[in-house]
Image (cartoon, rainbow, N blue to C red; front, side, top):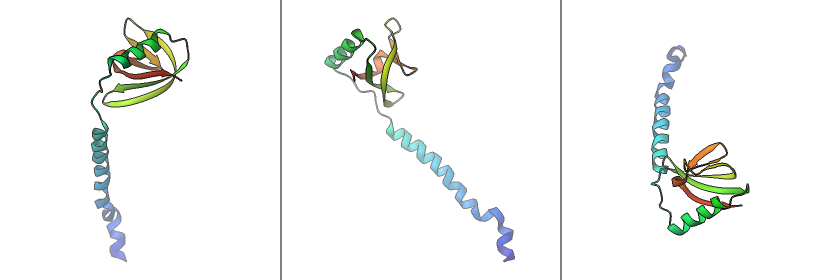
Length: 105
């Protein structure tokens, strides 16, 4: 009995390596989920341009590329800046070059 109480936290030491492994495994999974930026066709670019040109405050669905991931947002576009080539949806600025798909809901 006395032998167990002297070990204290030492018996749990091997489990500390599991948290380090969990962190490195999470990083590996994150790296695998990254994708290269897809190219869009000229037809798709025209469709996106048409939606932006005739936008009047409707809710839209936006797919865009950001830092290796394809993300989606739904909502109203709050700003379209043609000079900076950026649109804003839900407080997120998205450059036109990163827009993959945009359509009205």
